[in-house]
Image (tube, rainbow over the protein chains, first blue to last red):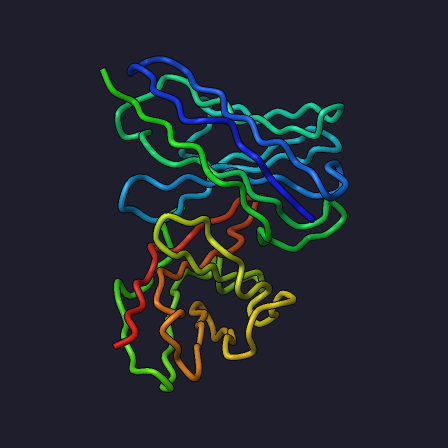
Length: 122
Length: 110
C-alpha cells in the first residue's frame, strides 16, 4: 500500500531554515510527481511546488521562488522540502503528496503524508 | 496566482444534495480540465474525491460528482450523510506547471 511518512515537528526561529523529509513506500518512487502543500492554522491549503523524482526537475509557486528548494534521494525513496528565511507566517502543517505519474499531463494528488508542523517563533 | 473562490460555508440536511462552486479565471479553471476536489476532516490529511473535473478515484462514493462550466467548477454531493461534514477544497492546474487551491468550503450536515 502507498505510504508517505514525514519527519517530525520542528520549531525554528525567524530567519532560520527548515528541511522536511517524506519517505515513500508501496510504489515506484521515480514514477510519480511529489507535491508539497502547506496549511496554516485554521487556514486553507496552499500549493508550494512539485518535484519529478526521476529527473529532479522542480516547479515552484511564484510566492515561494527563491525561498524553497525541493530535492530527492532516489536511493532511499525520500523527497525533501527546504524553506529558508522563515517568518512567523510560515507556521503551518506541511504535507507531501503523491501526484500524477511523471509520464502524465494530469494534475492531482492522490496520497498524502501525515503532515509536519513547523512552528516559527522567537 | 490568486486562490480560487469558494463559498465559505454550505449546509444541507441528511439525504439532500448540495453543490459547492469553485470559481477561477480563464488562466486556470477555464483553460484546463484539470480540476480536483479534496475532502478534509478536522486534524486529518486531505483526501482526493474528484480529479480531472469529473473522475472519481477508486473507493470514492458515487454520491460525489464534479462538473465544470466556463471558469467555474462544481462539486455535488447527493444523498448527504453525516460523515460528509468536512472542509472541501478545489484545486486547478494554473499553467506553467503550477497549481492553485481554492479557499475551502465548510460543509455542515444539519
